[in-house]
Length: 160
Length: 265
Image (tube, chains in turn cyan, brown):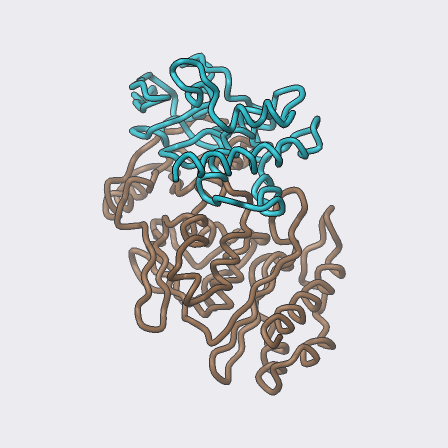
């Protein structure tokens, strides 16, 4: 049996037919062809699939597409401005060498934006704890942590 | 993952009805345990009944000497609640230590409690804070709720609607956190209510349990030394690839003492 699902993805209304067991990340990658969101572990541990659902970071490999019915989704593709200008978090990852192979990066950036939203001015220890659900095997996290702290400060300065 | 039928429940009555008329249904809350279980094909429900669209199942309130957390409230909401932080900081801390931020944004108290995972944090909170688990049919005391490994007093067709925690004079929760999963290898909640003390343990046994010998000792004298020499028999505890039953028994002692230390400091 197939089910109709509709949601807003990166500001655009989308709909599709899915099986009940279709994961949200499958819907995003295979139906919508937005392949920026990665699947690393498929077991809720690595965080490569982190996206925002109604503005909150979640792991899209451990959600059914049907659980996102009617929700507003933001993926890495929707983060930069329409003119291509990078989001402050993306720019900070670039500035601080926050990525190497790039596989974990979409999830790291989306989690970074979520950390900045929830914990403005978070210190290094807090940021490291908040990254418990995001695994990077290249960088040793140093550049990632610096990028998130830097972007967080800039995002809140811009808001004030 | 095997396929299944999927339903949104409009309200509790609708969910209860769907539980009755489907062959082998499962309730879906946050899905942080159920979906991984389905991916591993460890369960094969015919129907998932999603409770997410029932508004009446979300929220936190302080009612007299109790904190009421509705079943579909996420760990992140409990952790960030100023009401919970003020009334029972140990409960906010417990919720804030579950899984990782993305998991806390989806996982719910009802789902965690209903699952009675031996390594979940909430069972220690429910038992330690003398909670009452409310369902669509009745109220169940924490002492009667956790009955075994992934087993609870819930009957087929019963749906948790809220958990009602009694506000203690003081309480503290600590766990030996599994470094990869974040689950409690052992977690201990110590709570004081006037002359009464409750010591609840998760992670160590097939389900959360109280340590009466420690409670008695702390009721006589609320000091770390009171529990330091109370050994837990390892016989009924869990041993697995992470650690032996004997080590878990030792950790119960260590974490109970550290909780008391934190409270008398």
